[in-house]
Image (spheres, rainbow, N blue to C red):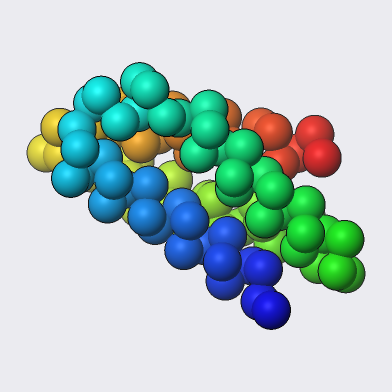
Length: 91
């Protein structure tokens, strides 16, 4: 199983959930979603993956969203990504 690909997909899906469900999704589910991402990250690391690849995956999204000006949930997206990156560093 490709845990890094799953991790990437989970991050991508957070954006979709925000788009579909709005601000309420982030307010109610952000911590649970971060936990699921961290579980996948942990599996990736336990199977020989490198933390730098997880951080690069997160940074790819941060870099893409930092230039975004028009999306109404950009603050929630970047909060999620930065929180996740900080927690991945601590694993």
